[in-house]
Length: 332
Ligand code: TXA
Ligand code: MG
Image (cartoon, rainbow, N blue to C red; front, top):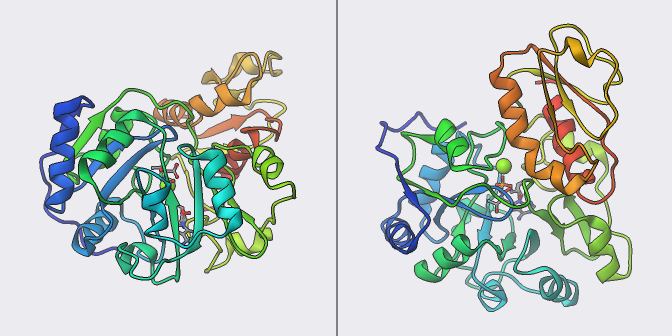
């Protein structure tokens, strides 16, 4: 269980310019918490080597400490100081870094990431982000930064600085505002085990990874995700949850429901919806991903008791979108 809340602290919001980035790096160096944009979603960062800072990070998010964090580094050389890269990991890093891919690999000898951040596992999750602010911040700080999505645990991930402020104001030192993110869903997580395994679909489509590896990815059985000790411990069944109930694959709409639409075809009864937002009127999954979390927040804010979601094809970023929607719809 998370420890009781710390007293509220003042959360500053600064533009993600050189001065803001310098402030953020100084805050990491003294053990503070900074939210910053990555190309996927906003992350809540702390010095990966500072166990006290990481304890505060878990507390600020209300995140269970059995759920490990991703270490963000500036380049592959820095990644190799943290984890042991086999041929598969090297290949994926060369193909997709910097970018929305996280690799789970065995920890290197004298891995600098605090045990609290890896939840006592002998593996570590590593990512080299592509966002210019994230890159500049990692360069300015000089060390690895652990960063989960910058939301209260179990809540919808943030794709703007305003989303971060809504969840974490009073709990963190600084939010760097770099505008809306590019991708909109979190990184794809690959376990570099004997059989490379898709632990979480995300910003790099699994088809693209399979094309580089020349083989299909292993996929954990659905029940390991719902169990107490899933392969990626954060992939619990209920996650990304708005307040409203979420109803998937809707082919009609009940009075008073809000509608999350996809594609050009209108849904019968859409006129009765309490509110409608269309993830992508042209039916483009990459566009839909950029809107997903923000539209869930907006429809939730309208107070509808339920959000009906139209079917979304599972290819490209559709796999990650459907994964997040299933978790948003799961019983709580
Ligand atoms: O796009 C992203 O990945 C964002 C941005 C901020 O980089 N971060 C993010 O972090 O989504 P988070 O903490 O919300 O999700 C990290 C996931 C969790 O499901 C966690 O269980 C899994 O990574 N994870 C971390 N370390 C792991 C490990 N050693 N083995 C398996 N899964 C791990
Ligand atoms: Mg998250």
